Length: 325
Ligand code: HPA
Ligand code: ZN
Image (cartoon, rainbow, N blue to C red; front, side, top):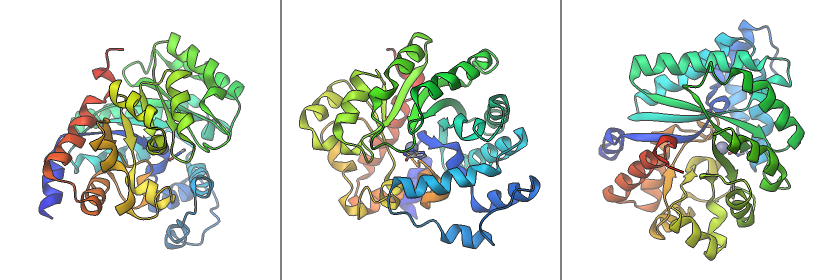
């Protein structure tokens, strides 16, 4: 408990969280009722009990199903406010939030509804709790590059209205078989447009996906990146270029990227000079928000107070606006 209070007091940034992954079962049921959506689970507990994953895809199936209750601007607002209210209690001072517009536009929800609900919450959250924030619009990598271009075209007319929050572009969903280079041209376009670029790489996919995210997509940060350890030359590059990794310990455990938290390579990566940060990924699904992730690795890996301070400082240094690229 003393450790918890120590970590809570450190100013921290959360740089890898999917807003749809903050949707708690209670809220899923409340929004289903509000929108007259029928859920394939009889109760909140039955839904929670279904959160037993074997890999990334087994999680994504439930994550996309859960997001189907999001219909109106108020739904996106309520989801985002619930997340901000939670992290405000954890000493999080800044958050860079991913969202997946294609999950919603494919169901007929206008992209403007998604932006409006989330952005209203972020602006209000800054007033209420002093938490600064921005958005990373993420493309679903299991869909085509053309679908990503179409999504970008739909979103660009909204850019000015949301210029205070929409700063980044990301890439998520099923990694294996959907390498970074599939999105090389759309990333080049986003780069021209002046967005900060990130991508999931090296979660389930090989170290080569991390190298290609750097070399072909020109990302400034890698989401996950834990499998970079398999390529010593890549590790040197990541350290030399100070490319942050947004590592998500509880996610890695729940999706069986690691079998035991004591085997997590976070400390080894830190010891090799990488800019490692701790994040929650999809906290409603993986059993913990940001503070829980810090505590879980601190205990399992025996991290010192000094290492915890380094991790929190890394998160502050890896925020978009600190980059001068
Ligand atoms: N990996 C890939 N896609 C995702 C994740 C993740 O951890 N969470 C939500 N979408
Ligand atoms: Zn993620």
